[in-house]
Image 1 (tube, rainbow, N blue to C red):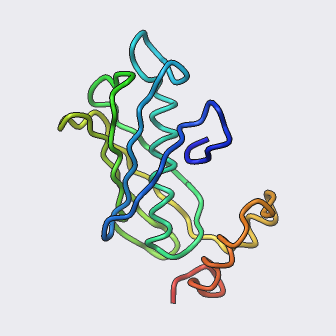
Image 2 (image 1 turned 120 degrees about the vertical axis):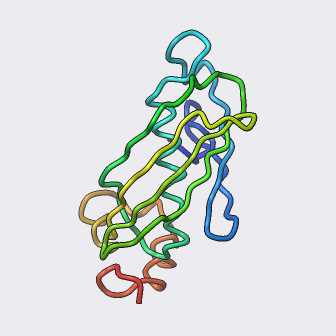
Length: 151
């Protein structure tokens, strides 16, 4: 939905890392319409969740979203590039607190905050299909400890 190129209705995000942050540029279009000319809040939230999730490469551990809060500060127009930038603001045990901003032409149009919970890769095997992940889980497993905690 967020970064995969195979979904024709997806957001097609390309996420990049810059030091301790990640960012992606997203341009919402008619596939993501809410009110006329504006992005649907759910599409904005999906983009935020995806970019926030890429901070897990910085944390070096698999995790899942526990909470996601999006503050819609300004309307989010279609056909204009918005940059979403995210970073880990704190880590408390298994909880990763992550924050993001969404800007367009220098104006912050939305912010997001989330708590991700560190899980072992076995979580995904028990609740989903890990076959499509290839080496991603192996890489994260090597970087994290037995309980999913970074050493």
